[in-house]
Length: 210
Image 1 (tube, rainbow, N blue to C red):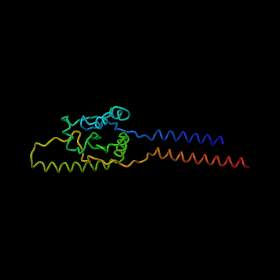
Image 2 (spheres, rainbow, N blue to C red):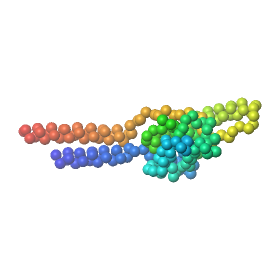
Image 3 (cartoon, rainbow, N blue to C red):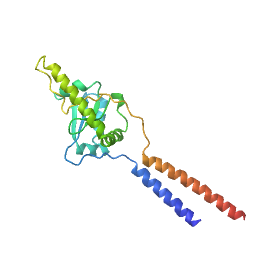
């Protein structure tokens, strides 16, 4: 029975460790090419104020220190660069050094756990480079076509947003929550622990009867 107790303690320890490690971590590039995080909105809007405040504490504050952070209000002249690609406010947009949109959410589609949502998008960004290059290639082709069409008109076009948007949809619907691997492992360990405990109790009961 002592061995069973040691096994139970070990399982509980593993469960705690896996649950602790299941929290998402945003892995940024280490080549010096910083990402851009833009937060756009009306300076008097409470949701915008709360959104900016989120980047002053906790993990979002750590992320802010590692990127180029752009809090831009609608009365800021810089907002005119973003305005053509904005459909609703407030908005948070994460882009890589080339301007590729990694994550974007606005208004009521901004999740309560913004850090984990950005981390999930960043993970997909790293795992699917072929898709990223394909979208960038398509975006360049669309931009070239637009330039050819505009070349026949006025030359006084507005500058592109800076950092530029690569054509991704301004409003990204929230993705379904996918359980973390650590959480699933934690559940499996708990189930295994309960099963082992029941088995130990059954063995002890039969030994006592005999």
